Image (cartoon, rainbow, N blue to C red; front, side):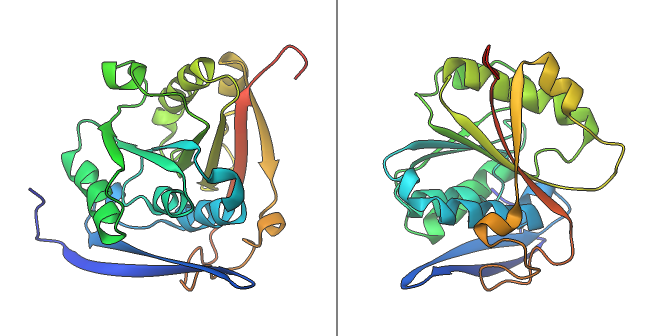
Length: 225
């Protein structure tokens, strides 16, 4: 059961394009644990999903390190078959995944504990995936390779899948380029203005603010890539 010593609140994010509108509610707990509230990267990734919503219908989507799961909830609300995951050793974060689903009437979302870098039975037994999501999973440099080990494993099982990820620039010295080469992964940067995410306020929120956010699509490197 969650420790309720933190302050609980709910944020509503509204995505709009012409006559199309989607509002999602995300419960937050203002707690020192990373996965308890919405980070700037999550809103940018959710905006990208909203811009690609026609491609998501009936596709199987896995969110890694989901926390309060804004991107995943948007994907499911756009018709994707969603699996949410977070650290198997952090039950409160898994509970947050479930709370976000409940807040948006999503009753058929599977929540699994996956620890980056570990090839667990839950990881091996995942169904065929079309898209993998990761919002600010490149936060701690010590975790970068573990994240990519997990992503590489999933992409080798699902060679046509793509890993859609956003990250916040925190240091010019941090790079995943050598790790991408080691794990034979290809990376393409996506410009934020291409999906109307180059603004300090998105989806009716004050996020991402003035943070510098980048968006990437990572795929399995082919012989021709």
